[in-house]
Image (cartoon, rainbow, N blue to C red; front, side, top):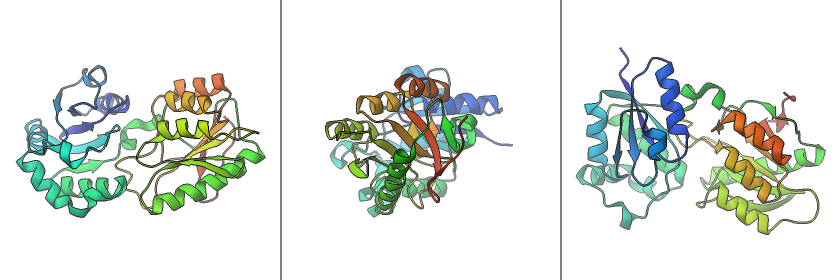
Length: 281
């Protein structure tokens, strides 16, 4: 018999969506809500406990006490400095096991964390296994589609993000008429969009491209797009967003579509291998 699904929850709405869909699938859930990141209004409908990020001993014991056998890591968590971590005894032991990956990019760190959780007896599952329609598919969403010029910017963005991903730096960039305005690093997508807006050039607006990093473990830190991403892209003067089909989580597909239509922005799921786009809905 499958045990309780443990959800390690950062910020945003997706931890609640995973819990909701898992319950609909007949699973019991328990949420470890990371203190200062998870939102009480999101996790409050399900059994949960707020725990400090580095309190690994308490996290593991809480998961085991609630019969968790499988885990999902979902929701953004800002990487704290070593000075701010203040790990408990078990946390210090796990940090030692993670080793050099602690100082690597996000993908290296998360891959090491997934490995350690597996060694602790848990099976780590991808959030996409529980979100269904919340995973972006190939093709356009909404009324607007990229034109020939935008498709060229998407192709340029794919090349840039794949190069960044090889170095485990980021998952996104902004391109305008072939010019790379900004690349995503530690600051995240929203801050990158803010910066890109200050660098906007005359002519058609730029394009945000978000991809899974090459070789990335899709059980953690998949690219995520929500209505706020669309409004921030519009504020930065962008005309569209391209994301990897099958590899991007959409926090609220209906609101996302409505926001894109309202701002006149295209949303398109792409296959990075061909930079092709599917047909219009």
